[in-house]
Image (cartoon, rainbow, N blue to C red):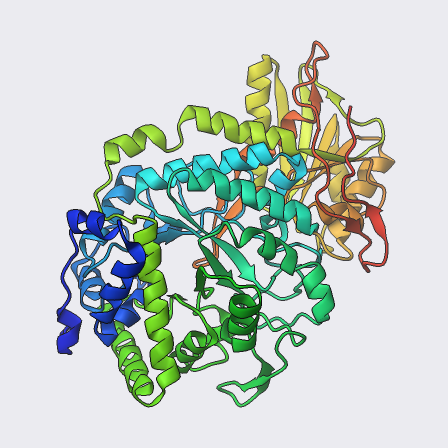
Length: 615
């Protein structure tokens, strides 16, 4: 299949670094001139950000990760004048490979340098396999330290810049004001708008030191949902007054400092009460991503935001399951978006027809719709202007230099320091700090084998550090199930000195988890509950005598459900539990809750914002 079916797909000239340096001197005038001389396809290309996590399949028909730029992908980027590419965990193996891949992507450009973006939020959402992950936003919120937040931004920026990334889709400025939220949780700094804004602005200040652009997300606020927009279309039923008082505030305070805002695939009827018809003929509310009243009316006009507006990924269930793929891109452009993220899924050369159909569809629509044609011109100008003003370059990065920078020991030490400062002691009835002795037996319960192994790893590392013997046993227990008998649990706990119950986002009636607590309490065995992700787990348990929150134990890549261990938080959490044999504290709990912990029915606050015990 030819990738160059239309003559205007092949007309662009690569802009050299010296030419770029000249353009940087007068960005507004030069951007205007560049866009005026662009073909329709070139302008549209600047608006599209594609991802290529996979390319082709193996003999067993498993998707193959795209870790080295394929000639076919290079041709797609060049001939369709793509302006941006986003990379995911599957694309990124190690530091030299990442640098080489990004260098090759930039060499494939058709004119201006590419935006090369990544979701390196830290904590739960991290893409680099080799890098300084950091503890995540809610952990930072628990420290209350703007200085640490800025330092995290600086380290992310320093590493990303050396790898070749110029755009980080962070920070999240959603307030997590619904503890049943299935998708934001520890990705949020807090349920308090002011703290979210302060921490986010500090992070932005840090990452901007290394010329990495930021995109705050997810406008108009994704923190009060009970459904995951990767899977379905959530609706938030709040008043406009409530929205302005809570969800809006972090965006209002950070938008002067960020380079872009990413939209949310959510419906807020108070902001836009129109309806759309889905591909299966249902009537649904208008997602903010497709809402002209929200993006153009509120964000552009009322709030006077002048930066880039970027859609959340258009292949997410909230969009892809409900609307035609080409039509929805047109609606997103008309709504006010400047960059359309992942409008088509391309994993093989045959898929290029989808991209070609999109170009033809939009060109045909623009010929009969002056507003669409104007919007494409406006957005192309805004993208080009951002590239020139921010001096986005396509110059090769050095893999050797990046290896010296990425995941450097000093940065990993800072990562641990942040986690140490975040650990929050929520409940303690004379259980902690636990006095370690030689030959202690510790039993671990969690709902994943990998989680048990991670906890054992750091317990045994601590034992080695203190030069003591320690025995560990573990059991994988589905906390929400009812399949463990009291006799089984009693046998497992036999002769144990301490039990670690590692919970992960409990909901109502976690029968097995409650049974573990009951059996341990009845047998007078001390138990510490570690809330390994969201801090709310204590609300769903009775009889807890010791509980800490660590704000994240795994990372996650929603594009392919890949998970990875987030080691720094559990390391710090475990080090907060113990006294050494000579009765020295290893780490003191200094974190304060950045959220309210409410009862399961959300009617009453059990542990308020700012709560946190100390030794």
